[in-house]
Length: 255
Image (cartoon, rainbow, N blue to C red; front, top):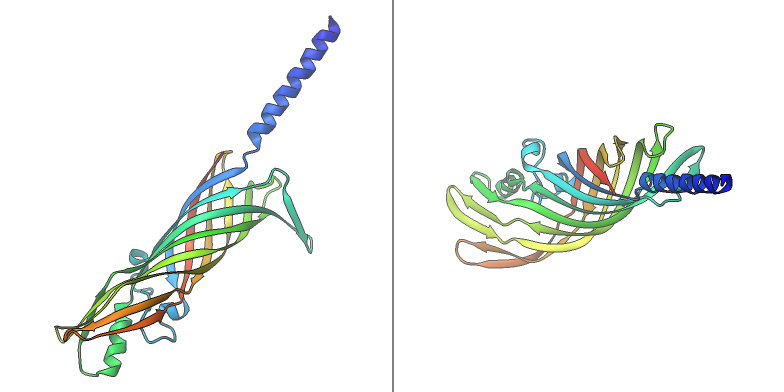
């Protein structure tokens, strides 16, 4: 009888431990986030280009430039640990869908026209650049606390494809209609690199803050520029889209 009771106790203990381990290990995290500030950089910010595709800069950055993302992370049950010069990191994998909305810099566009025709007052109206990005990549996690993946610093790399919309532009000169440039859409390879910190508050809830650099270079084909006289010209526009997103805040749920 004692042997039977002992056997039942051992089996019960194993079952409890197994249930405990299963509940602790949650391989997937679904994360939703946004960037409070998105800064166009390089030629996309009007540096070194003719003003034909620049994005709005710091003048009204918070109101005009928005980015959001939805991300699925996967942490293998057996951690992938790398030790470089005594610094240990754990690698996890991720797939993300993200989108940017960045205002078009009509001020630079009009200034470029004014440089060609001094004394003429140009005024342009345009909508925003918009990108939709599908990317995969990985995180390297560097623990700040002794408990793995509780509070950590990270760097991350993503590769993928992005579809970008080129906004249409309507320009007037001295109050009279002058030209209209058509909108366009193009898909191109994209890259993103970021760093930040992240904290798991509970088994299901986490939050983080980070900064990322995003780049893609779509080529918009056969963009029409039509004058008020009805004359049209067509050309391809290659617009490097480079964005620095700062103060990214995200919230994750494990399952």
